[in-house]
Each structure stands twice: as structure tokens, then as C-alpha cells.
Image (cartoon, rainbow, N blue to C red; front, side):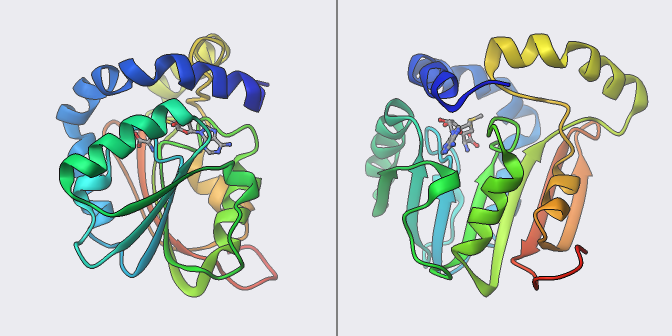
Length: 210
Ligand SMILES: C[S@@+](CC[C@H](N)C(=O)[O-])C[C@H]1O[C@@H](n2cnc3c(N)ncnc32)[C@H](O)[C@@H]1O
């Protein structure tokens, strides 16, 4: 498994190339998925693993934004993006598994393209649920194993090599992870060759997993 330290080192080095590397997927559909997801955000919003801040342009103006990431280099780019957009965002360097916020602080908690990278994605989701109000929303845009069998098997075969290179485990099952974390799924959509997931969930009740 890739450790947090290794992930941090990777993103510190990759930060200045990240937006360039993301250009093609953004144009091919990721950008419109971001727009659709973030249109549903409201109130006090926490975005975890904010990266270079690619979601920032798509939040409704009424949102109060807090954003965290493990990598200071990624956050430096996100800060510049927020300044350019004229958005007041409170940025902090923070591990998603140890969020320094009290329980039930946020109306909306957002993660995009993070579950593939976190060493323990279920622990991360539980921590995101902890800081979300009981009637709040967790909004996720994640990529995972395609439901097109041939493509899914191809991802499986290359998963170790891909993870070693980029620290990204691209054959995880985001919906299963959300359920394992005990969240209540309100909406789930799989798109773009069955690779991308748009998920909306609430922290859910303790007890049986939905
Ligand atoms: C693939 S990038 C996604 C960035 C952004 N959310 C987006 O949609 O473009 C993954 C991000 O997760 C961050 N990250 C990885 N592990 C983390 C952790 N344990 N806590 C917080 N951020 C983490 C990385 O630094 C990186 O910025």
C-alpha cells in the first residue's frame, strides 16, 4: 500500500503539472460533472483534498468555503485560483483522516477524485461524515472500476502498476466504500464509460449499513 508520506511526496512534486495533466479529462466531461455536483452545495462547505482548486469556480455564491489538502504545494495553486476568482476561501493543510473540526460543523462536505488516493478511504469517509451535520450532504465525484467488464478487467490488470506510478488505485468501488463507511446514499450515478461516480449521501444513522 502507498503510505501517506509517499502520497504527499508525489503531490508535492506533481502539483505544478496537475492542471495540465487534467486538461483532457476535464474537457471530455469531468468539468461538467464538477458543475453538476457542486451546484448542489449549500451553506458552510468543507472541501477535502481540494488539490489545485478545480472545483472552486462551480460553487454557488452563497456558500462559505473551507478547503483542506495534505499537500502544501497543491494548496498554493488552489489559493492563487481562489484569489483570481475573488473567492474568500479558508485554506488549511490537513489530513482528511484527522480533520481538526468539531463534529457536525458543515452543511456540505465535498470530495472529488480523492477516494482513489487515500490509503484508507473508508476511514476518510467516516471522518467526513463526522464533521457533516446530520441533515447535511456529502457530495462526491469519484472514479473507480468500470462496470463495463472488459474495461474493468483491464483496470484490474494494471492497478498495481498504476498505483505505484501515481498513487491512485483506479479499480476501487466508490459506492461500496460509501456504504462500508455507513453513509446513507441518496443519489448515485455512474457515467463516462462507467468509470465516474456522482454520489450524494448523508451521514446516516448508526446501525445497519444502507
Ligand atoms: C487526484 S487529486 C484530486 C484533487 C482535486 N480534488 C480535484 O478534483 O482535482 C488528490 C488530492 O488528494 C490529496 N490527498 C491525498 N491524501 C490526502 C489526505 N490523507 N488528506 C488530505 N488530502 C489528501 C492530494 O494531495 C491531492 O491534492
